[in-house]
Length: 487
Image (tube, rainbow, N blue to C red):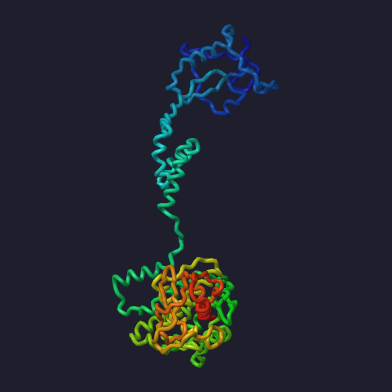
């Protein structure tokens, strides 16, 4: 047999004898590093150190040992010993030849996952039908709502029942506006004052003015700059036809400030037009304010108007009882202070409606007690307005003059709706006493429509009037009501 080159020295061409086998099992060398696996000069190779093998062994499988070849006896002994190895004794042993190695420890089995949750069966028809009432009230959970609505697409009787229940819920719970009710402030104040009366209460005749200015101020509170410049058209009745004047929201508040200054001057308070300004008519004061006011007709006008209103109410509250009889000059006529406050409350409401319509916002009428007081003032002013129109040649002459305080011809005015009532109007003289026995005509009007007529927002011909009796007297009274208006 030809011996391989000497692995313990350089290859000198001489053969060497294999060391005798001591008789025990073959010794398996320990694991070698990657560098040892690439050492082509170590033991076990049959080439010389300087030999070069140009054969490509990339895909060649390792040649199995031959049991008849004495040179492969050691390799067979090593394979037998490898098969006998205990896995636990050499856990780190890895494959270093082409033969099977000791298998790596088995990986633990993955932990079992959670058991699947059993799926609940779908609700039965009876259960879904029992949920229709709760579904109509929006009291079902999300899952129940989905189940009921899916069922309604398949069951016609339940769908009809659900529709009836939903309509019934709408009748029980009508939809309401998210905006606060206009009279909420009045009700809250009334409740508070009823439980704890104010030490200095507001006079009854000043309460409508206090309420209407507060309502208008609440409307203005959230206005931006653009809303303050919204066009507003003022309307009134004059010279037998309706008059108009275009301004802005800020201009309307300036108009209210200027005319309220007449009441302030009667109480000895500061006039917004200045101390040297003549009283003048409401229209003259308004024009002067728009031209020369230190307050520009922008949102800045709100604060002086608001402060003046508070001052007026506070002053009359502390003034005592006799203040209601003070005269307030309006230029061509005068009113007692109590009536002047009612007149200012009426005009504040009318112009608040003008502003609300300009900005497309709903605005409710005053409360019934306050509206009744305003209508009562207009009814009491009608005989004097009718006499003024006769002097101007705009109304028919009186049919029969009577002494002051004596009963004379009468027209009965019936106002329907909230704040309504009945009033007898003397036709021939403001000093005459109206008498039901001398009634010659009757007029029936809705309360809101009568206020629109007295504000000059509708003409006498446009008013839907229920009437009977003397046509001439009816026409004169309707035109007298419209003539109460002014800018």
